[in-house]
Image 1: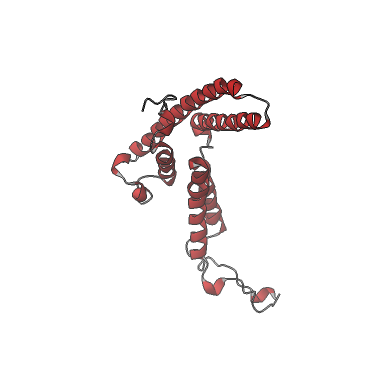
Image 2: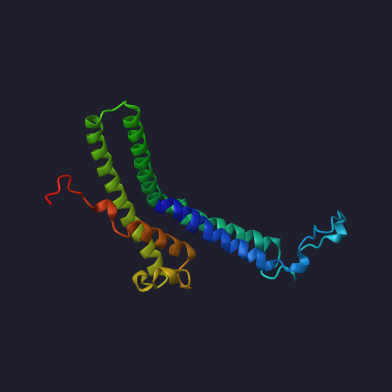
Length: 198
């Protein structure tokens, strides 16, 4: 759940919201296309001029900004070629989750008995814990490396202020948020005792 909400809200949402806000700021009310009159006259429509665009000098600067936003989305989703190692580990974690779904389906359909599924589930849990531990460790190293390059100590910046840290890239702040969402309680490292004594 943390990964899916991170991708939707942070990796894609925050970057696209920024783009849309900048586009809205660039469009002044008097330069928007008027559809209320119902006129199809091309002269009745106003287009953004270089002066009216405000934040974009021309369509090429808009295209360049859009490209940077898409690059930030890819980086925040760990899909850049330089992030291949950490992205692969995340995919392996997701494969374990899918295997759990298949195992649950097999149990529900009666294709497996509980005693047959128990060792498979334990093996799957062990693999997931190993992959998740590795993923968090590599992600933490990646975020700290990027933050150190900017001269920032992540533990000194509260999460709600991370986006405001000018020296930290948006991608680093986003990945730090993913790390915090996953690493809040290190739930995957706990070994629950199957036979509690109390």
